[in-house]
Length: 179
Length: 179
Image 1 (cartoon, each protein chain N blue to C red):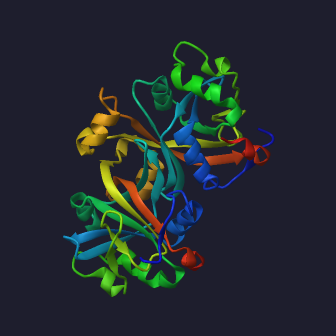
Image 2 (image 1 turned 180 degrees about the vertical axis):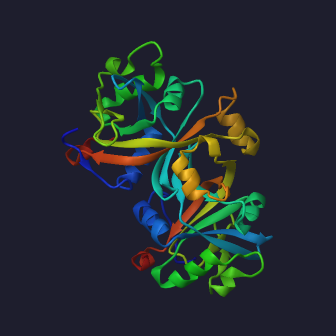
Image 3 (image 1 turned 60 degrees about the horizontal axis):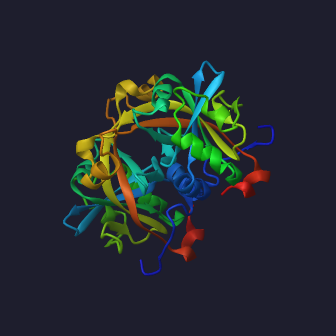
């Protein structure tokens, strides 16, 4: 954390999208009043400006443990991991944090972000702290059939969480460790 | 058009966000079966990956003429204009295309995009052709009060249009003409 410096939210966008769609990013939320955190691997998301504010938009299915944490917590973080931690990233993508401490299993550490105190993965190279401004849902009937059948065979439609990027940081010395 | 080459959808992201929030971008749709187009200046939007596809997300208020065109048409384009066309961009931000041909007034030309035939502004430096995959709405009750009162005093909540980026191009020689 101490080695990270503030960056503009638009920096490394091409890398972040490439890594998100190949390896995944870690979406982290507090599990209990800021002591233990949970993280889920995400492959989809968007960055931009809405309501005049920089936004990270993440989507979470209701069946995920992260869903109930996102509904409860005001803050989350998105973390871009170095390639040396591929195995940890995979573990966070298959296990559920409902009955175990996934981050400890994956040998990752959650620390309080310097921006708004969201749980940030210490080992990440880039992280964004976000404040949930809004949540809404996809509407099955307003979706092209290809996506409805291809992405939602069991009807587990994502909720969309709109997080204002209140702080984002990069460890410039470790950018070369990105996948 | 002939001078534009295909680019990756992540290219020039920082420029596009900066220009969108300062000058605006042009969101264009066909008005009538591919002969006349309409364009509206937008200041908000997001780029990323959802459903495994590259997406441009634009938001349009129901009161706008573009709203009914977006509801009807399958395709739209987002255009990044050179700084020499600031006045045209302003005109498209204040006038409505309901009762006039805004693009002609602004001395801009709509041409059929080489990707999926969306109307593309010929004078743009960068453009994205997009296919509407989904549309959904913001939920007033699920929004922080600051935004509800600050952005929607009259209750004119945006509809969100999720457009797959099927083709995006840049005129490399004119990138230096961006604001």
